[in-house]
Length: 403
Image (cartoon, rainbow, N blue to C red; front, side, top):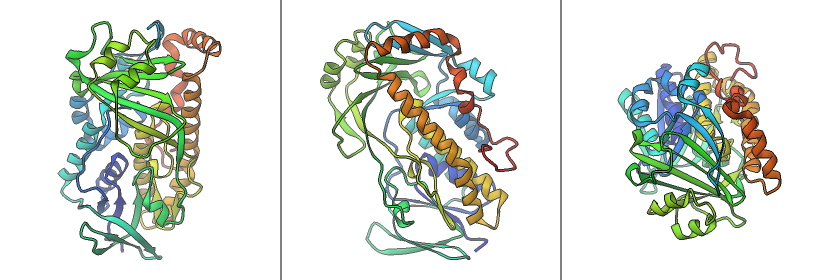
């Protein structure tokens, strides 16, 4: 099946990046998506240099710069008072240090940019409204059985299969791992507001991390500076299913009633969407023969390090490189991918969990946290050289921690 496509299941950020990377390396690709409309929900996300350099290398640079913003700095402030603890430069400083930008972008905009470039190649079929039902494989290839919108069975043959179908991956179950991620005890409130409605006392050209015992918040500009993003993460013992539940402004306002600097922004928001946050260790097995999992399907990341999308983008680029290294041995390529990515994914997950604990420290432990942040000051981001400095450049040996 040398001429058969690599089947990529899932047309989110991970799947689209994977399909684009594979097609640009000369491999035939077919995309499968359960949804009938490729429309992304959510609000903003952060593209740190480890992710932005991959997308730029794939030819998305100009489109990204039109849709994204490059905040001047990361400001860490106290939610109740607005007191600034530290200001770490981004923008030019990130470019100088990592040779790639630190960007913020609306998730829907990134999805559309990726989709436009995938379609623009003209060589990647996209089948929507298909639900995977069964996977068979042998030494020659993979057969995916799926149902269409009418409930009819369809069969697709490929040389390999990539499960990029998110947190509740159906591909993972079909490969023998039905385990599910568990609620992490947090929920995220996400919303945007037109820039003209942002209270004047807020600095809109920066990423701001707001800390408090009630939770934490992140604000930054979106859509080329036309809108402003707010994400508030609070602890939540009970978990509700569903990704995009409606949230009431008065409920959030009551939770953050002591956060006087941020309350006017909350008032300006017409609505919020609420997500329950899930977590799990990386799956013990990412690959099975000619099949492999990437992104949230194998290692969901809590948002306290802003690396969920970035890690999926890294996975996609690394997968393409592994298949280039083993062009006729997808099983070997995927075993290599699993081996070299597992360590990094686990480290990112652990740091994200640690950040969540630090952000929500109660008094008086929060006093020590605030002193440490203030002491780091402009050098706050330097602790993350291991994260932001990641690159595929020169990674030909494919040995840990190369990818």
